Amino acid sequence: MFRVDETIATVEGLRGGPGAVFGKGEPGLTVNFNLKRGSEETKGRVKYTASDFNLQRFDGLLSGQIAEDLYYMIGGYVKSSPGIRDAQFTSEEGHQYTINLTKEFDHGEINVYTRVTDDFGQWYLPFCLNCGHDKGDFSQLGNATRLREIQISANGDTEIFDFAKGRGWDGSVTGANIEFEFGDGWILRDNVGLTTGDANTFGFVPSGTAVTAAALSAVIGGPVTTASGATLGAGDFVQTYGHWVVLKDLRSFVNDLSVNKNFAGNHNVTFGIYQSTFSSDDFWTIGNPIPVHNTKHGDFLDSAITPADIAAAGGDAGFMFGIASAGDARTTAFYIADSWQVNDAVRLDFGIRQEAFDIDYVLDTGPGFPDGTIDLNTSLDDDQTAYTVGVNWDVNDTVGLFGRYSKGYLLPHFDNVRENQLEVNEVDQFEFGLKYGTEYFDVFATAFYNTNDSFESVVGGAVAAAAFETEAFGLEIDATASFGMLDITLSGVIQDTEVSKSTTASDVGNTVLRQPDFQFRVSPSFDFQIGEMTGTVYGAITFVDDRFGDLANTVDLPSYEKVDLGVLLRSESGIFFQLHGDNIGDNHGITEGDPRNPASPNGRPILGQSWKFSIGYDF
Image (cartoon, rainbow, N blue to C red):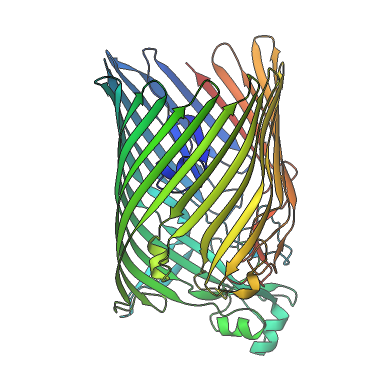
């Protein structure tokens, strides 16, 4: 639902801490993407980007002054490409535009914006890892399997879907940020947002293990042929795939109103009320199994061959599941926070949030399509409290220490209600850290311990639903070193994670799925000058330790490294050039296994090597 473009000025990330109070009660990562704003000076940028995978993208930005104290920023992009995993068609296509207006007053400002997006890309899924495919650019989807006629109702209605649409967002985000000072130092803030649109998914999803044509031939008693009439060799692979359609009509209206006041010069207090209403109307038809030739852009097999034949040869028969559902939810929260500057060196932070929510949800399920019978009509309401307390001690101008405890929660969402997972997920988090800053070095080191309630439920999979609790402790590092024109940034984590409780008893004591014991990213950059041109050479080396792909710890995801490299050249005239290489070593790290069938040798690798070249002009 979110696309980064030239309209973004800065990115703020808050992990833990006061996010439990100011971020909807959730102590995980809260991210703000701050838009660029206009000023008295007219500024702009145009940029064209091409790549070795036939990307074409044009970005534009213009900002300035409309009238006295009234400023504008408008920008966006249009793009298209077949994708790094070329699927024989334009699999990534879209556009986006953003308008941001700011009106300044003597005692405040009003900022309004709207961002309209229509952008989609192929849904990159796990695929067979032992069938000889190039893990960096393989795509099972192709022209032969792009279109599929699927039954969508119990009375036999069908519809032809185009799976080139992949996953994407066709909608808008509109909002306003209002801030005024009144009275004796009181500050009023109101942040309001309206999000509406369609977040649809069209996927070509593997089911179970790929098997050889020889094994399938033994089952059907003859040669294995494709829909186009080709006869497969004994060593060719075949597999059951399914066309998944998930249509989601989303709407969210949020308002966060707060007042802030500094009392006695050392208590910075915020009082707030947060309200939201949101809904999701869904139509799903997933599973829809069909046998295919498991090769790049493979064809359907002959219509006489069934998924049951694939299963009899050692593969999987797939499944059918469909829903029509409508969910509406409302939340209201009150919060208060105080940042108390005890003295010049010590600051204490306190905050508490009380939130009430209710959900109404109706569901119609069926075998690949809704069957017209209401299977679930439920209402859920509850209230939760989040709070945090923290301390910061500036030992001297170079060293600081901090500590914090946060308790937060994740409220059930519509998928949880559908799966009868109605409990609130609670999270406890402890942090203790060191800040060290000099002319050449800045280091943040944060030791942490957290506990987390969670659920595991995979639609259409062999994995049994489970409720479980986890705990983790470790050390996060963020460090930078600057030596003249050379900068080096290090970020990473060392951790130990464990399933502490589970309704699946054998999972207790196991490592949390997809969590490595360590991962690090080293990012050097070097500034230089050639004549009137200034430039920057930059890179990044990412190290990810091995992980388990499932809670049972039966699927090992090997460790991997990834190297990126780029150069940016800027001229005094405003023209600039950039060359960026992603995964230049063409490594094949696996980010997940097959969540529906962990025993299957399917996995989702990172994208292979790619290069982008941009030319632009700033004015």
